[in-house]
Image (cartoon, rainbow, N blue to C red):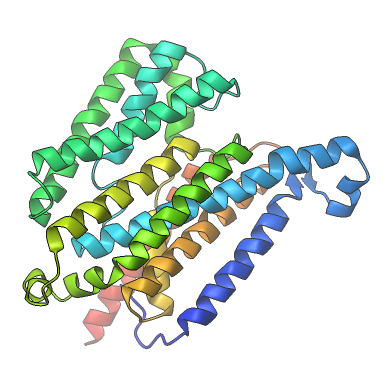
Length: 337
């Protein structure tokens, strides 16, 4: 699902995405419930500047960081499983996070994006732990990472079972329905500077590890037998990549809820612009994911202003439409041949 003949320079694309991220963060910090407000105007009013610094700016930075984590996880999933339709939630992390939040809501009550520190910490921690435990359960059921097909099937089974358990808890406790809905639809509204620091720290670690192991993804793209003939230690590298995938996905989901299609669409957009090795694909998918979620967050704030559209709904609509377009183009290209 790539556009044939694309020959953009990876460095040029990376610089363009960095520029778009900076512009998006600057614009996001100036967009509020009442519309656009200039930074110069906000700096003259202490209250307005506090809103910019404490609410809008961390929200924009956090949206970019969460999108970058999902874009990175999507690139790893598609490279590791050699499947262009793989996404960060493939190993059951989304259903695990939902179950964790459902359990936490029955204990804490309230909204999953509540501002109270202890409740917020408990819910985000529950989402992260649920996502990681779901991936670990998938690995146990698949008996390791040696068999890709078994790992994919185990991820599907874990996702269905844990999702059913989360729905059962919601059915038994209707008072948590609104909170679960907020988590499932995704939101960047309550990201603060602490969340930004956490996501950026995890992002740096995940990018460094992924970049170091990217040549293994290049070898896997040629087939497992070819990778083994090159003397690469596939088993430990796969474990490391799955751990990075789980860490990146769990961290993003814990802070923003379930945001669809960002991790799936970002690598496809990168491959449509450049044809390069996985070290650049991983890096560019990270930047592309940040730009996509940041743009979706801006649109979610502006389309129904002064109300906000759930960002997960917007990414699902736009991402689904984009993937349908890719499928149509692919079928048209094959028919022309």
